[in-house]
Length: 120
Image 1 (tube, helix red, strand yellow):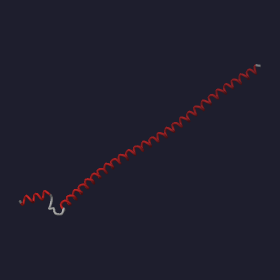
Image 2 (cartoon, rainbow, N blue to C red):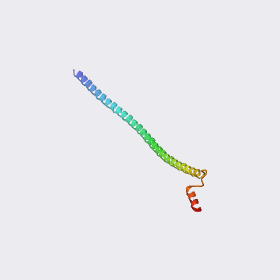
Image 3 (cartoon, helix red, strand yellow):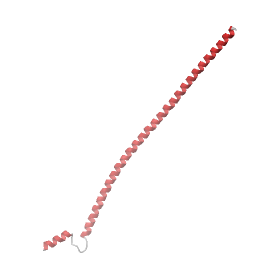
Image 4 (tube, rainbow, N blue to C red):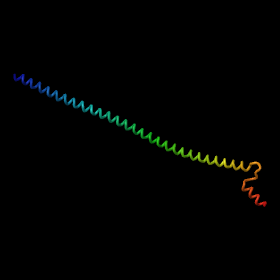
């Protein structure tokens, strides 16, 4: 009977040891799984960070491009104003030429009144 009791006690002890080993293995598996998830999260964060940096760079490039376009627009506006001024000047010159070439006229009003007063 003592042998049976020793055998049963040893069997129970072995089962307890096996349960403890199983628990330890399960804990290690969970830790490994947690590490893997953490590693995947870090990889995702790195990828997101890289995408964010790319996005920031593109936004910066777009801002620079917008600034360049604004400068170009300002220069174009200035050119348009200069051209408008030139057109107006040319139009005024044409009007003056036309005025001076009207048949039957001998100059501008000022010129005519000056010539009348000088002969009188």
